[in-house]
Image (cartoon, rainbow, N blue to C red):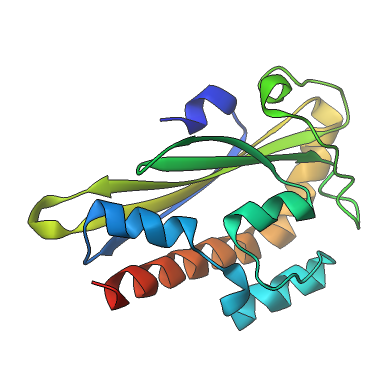
Length: 175
């Protein structure tokens, strides 16, 4: 998977999937057209975190809030990354481009990747999944991140599950 090229080793991961009653191409189109601002829950959680509440908030708009587009296998997978000190109030984001992301290792940071992947299943069904992986650059950052994740992790999972729900709804409505 493409996500493996950017963060093959990590300390924390979160994976969610859903089966969608639609062909792979239609589901991937729903991924690309995902607008996170259509979920009141996601907007609320992003506001609590202090992130801008842009409308719309599609995948390409994630770049405005600090993510970096890392790569895409059209029709199959898209990957975004973000580097920062997430445990700080404003996240301490640092823009690290796709060419430097894999090797970035400056102490005091964490690197996170977030993907969406679509796989065709039998019977015209598809499986869409999302995975988030995080690696820290030194032991102190690891400790700070784990404390942060203890509180934020469950809410992060809600965002990802809700995003999958939006994708499913969109793909199945247009079937």
